[in-house]
Length: 379
Image (cartoon, rainbow, N blue to C red; front, side, top):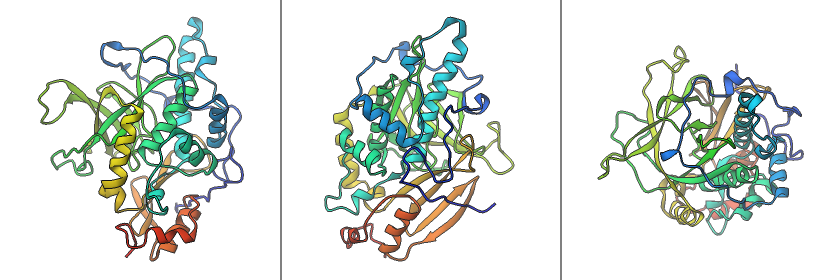
C-alpha cells in the first residue's frame, strides 16, 4: 500500500487531519492500548508525587484539548470506586494514553525557530509555548514538547513531574559502546491513580523511534509497550550507569525494531539503548539551561532543520502510527519498517514549502534569509 500523507487542516482545530473525525466518546481496545499482564512500577521507596498547580489556566487546558481533538475526562472527575476499581484504573490509563497519542498527532517535533528566525532560538516559556502550539499550531523539540505536556497533565489533575535524561549518541548501533553527553533530554513521570503511587513515564519529545504511549516504571520485559506499530517495542531497564562511581541503578529506555517476520516482543532483534535517566526532579530552571545548551551548541540541532510528524496509518483513531521525517535534503515516511522518500529538497524554498504542505508549519518564504550562510543551509 502506498504512503499517503494527509495535509493538515488548520481551519478546524478539533480535527487533527482533514479526513479524521473525532468520536464524542473515544473507545479504545483495552488489549491494544493498556498494559495487560504488566507489573506495577514505582519510584524508589514507592514515593508519591505531590500535586502541583499547572502553569496553564483551566481555559488554556480546555483550548489545548480542543487543539488535539479530544475531550477526555479529568482524573479528578473519576473518584476511585472500590466497587468498580478495575474499570476506573483502565479509564485513567486510557485518558493518559489518549492525550499522549493526540498530542503527537497534533504537534510536530521541530526546531524551525532555530533556523528561520532572526533570534535563532527556541523559547520554552510556558506561555510562549502555549501561543506556539495552540495558537500557531506549530511544535518544538523535547523541552518545549514535554513542558507543554507536563503542565497540561497537571492541569488535568495528574500528579507529575519532569526528569532529565542523557541520550546515547550511538543508540542506533547496538554494537557500539554507549556514548553519553550531558543531561539534554527531558521525560515526564506520571502517577495516574488517586489511590496509588504507581508510576509511568511519558515522553513526546524524543522524535525518531521515541515513545508514543506511557510506559510503566518497571525494569525488564514487564515494562514492554508497543511503539508506532507492531514491529516497534520499547522497554525500561534499571541498572548502574556505565562508568559511574556509584552502584545505584538508573533507568534506561530501549527500543527494538522487529523484522517483517518478527512482529512480537519475543523475537530476537537487538535492543537499542536510547537514553538514560534517574528519578531526580528536573526543574524549569534546569530545563531553560539545558535548552540554551542545545540551541547554541548541539550539532544535531544547529546543523539541521529537523521535523517529525506522526500520522495515523489509516482513518481509524485506533490504528497504528507512522513517522514522516524531514532531515537533510529529504522528507521520508517510515512505516512498518520500510522507508519511502516523499520529497527531495533542492533549495531552501523547497524546504519551507515542504514544512508548510507536509508538516503544517507556516514558515514564510522570506524567512529563508535567516538560514543563509548557516550550518543548516541546503547545499
